[in-house]
Image (tube, rainbow, N blue to C red; front, side, top):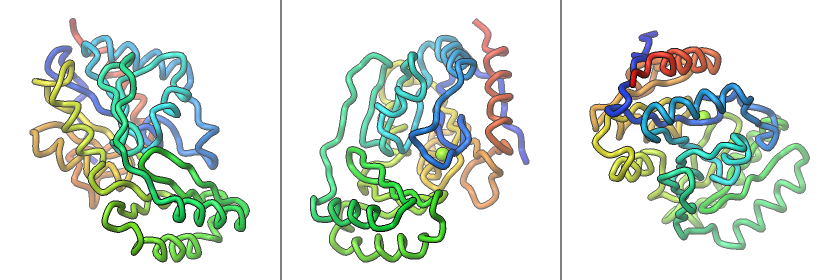
Length: 248
Ligand SMILES: [Mg+2]
């Protein structure tokens, strides 16, 4: 597994980090996830070292990212790029797109009928989690497939780790990184993106195209990422090394 470079330059690199499965282990219930204070402090320190050019890039809504990393806020792209926050204390800029009410009602009823499933509703889409009820995987996939013809002009289905997501077609992590890289404090820097799942491949594609550094957690076989780290613990070690080597 090719190990990524860990010397980031304070004014020449910008760091984009996925959250679940990259910074934090994936939990059965996504609402249980919390960052420990040492991780928050380390990210804060790296962000300062990079002049604020650190952004969290997640499928979660930004409000949820803020809850996880409280009390610190970071620049962020949430809900697969449907929400953007260029600076930690900016208001969240949200794209206007929503699933039709009939589709949402159907999904809510489906989850109610199948205990253990969890529907995460976010701006611009939903995530249907079956991690706590893997026996419903086939039913979930069949149900979501059934919905697709009503919405596939505007939404796409993303099959993640024990989760099915319906996300707006024109929003993805790659588009979010591209957008953030247009403006300060990210513009003019070399992007570094770390992610672990299928939705991160959009990010790897655009970051490779801008001659950035791409790192896949869990191995980079079948991934567009150039480098790999084995797991969340290895990401922590890498970040510690990054933090200690940012020179001012
Ligand atoms: Mg992830």
